[in-house]
Image (cartoon, rainbow, N blue to C red):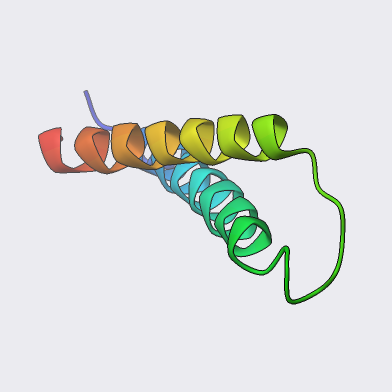
Length: 66
């Protein structure tokens, strides 16, 4: 089926952006928590880092599988 708007690819790329930003932002918070002298919620940050990694891997796999 022809998809003139390429919605499947667009959705996968948007998910890649969201997942990558989630992963990178939370990883940055984990790495720099001591140098910035801020208190972070450690379990929430680790959980959101894992969720961002899963979303990123899933969207990359979806793009490759296409």
